[in-house]
Length: 361
Image (cartoon, rainbow, N blue to C red; front, top):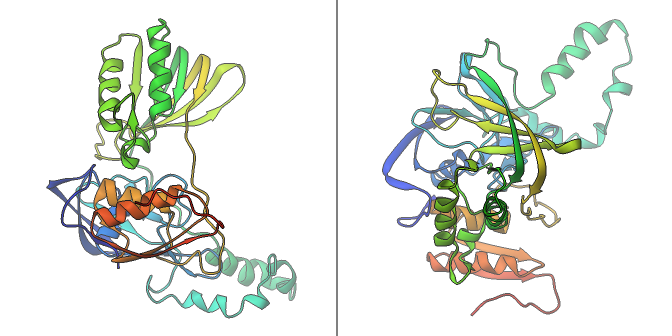
């Protein structure tokens, strides 16, 4: 079972506990947690059900690529369906609930669909529900609509406000990792007006988690120094919690900024859409780990190696007391070392290559 480690956590502040609820169950996290790390820290591995067969689903990633941990947030006028737990920052009093199950997450009668899978091929309803025709509108279609989808649309008018903003810059840099910070600094030093956006609340990307060095100093220190230098430059704007949402022709880009999701405040707009015209656009968006394909790789407890490393290092959350690592490249060995450093057991590393070259001591 996943659990909170007694110490560590690069991004969390243990002096600032945050109570929240999941499916009405009281839980506790810390300032700096995401909803996903908060759930894992409380031993909540099962977070949802699959779309068609209602198979159990757990947290797979630690970022915006998360396919499973889609939850409903808030209630009434502040309700939002299909929010990713991995990108939702925890705040005091957050209310979250799982989706696509009945009567409960743990006991879902829809799971019977898996036993009937041979009778439910893709598009089966277009052939099975043809007769009698009068049943389609009043029986079949309402049933299909009730069964389809994951979250439910809000029933109340949205209580939040939103805004858009126009910006014209010489250089737009999307991504606040090492490459993005370096590109922004180089452009700013050349006199360009720069807008640097990062989709998370923290700068530096994966480098601080992986413990690498940049220009002879720890990545975390380099990031802090570079960020301070950029903040002191009048021709640079830095926006965290701002995701590059689209890059189009003629230097046009959209940036989606979350202003109040991490600290709900109805006196300010919740989100801002930036409409940016840039002379040049630098996309320093990094890479996403590709999961391996094997039977059962969609079950709760199976996570990306990079995500495990993020939860252990950033949030002091362990995926379990013992972990088996399956890989076909060197990067997963960093996860093995990170787990060993906090006292967790890694009894087996399965490497698909004939010659493993990972950085084990």
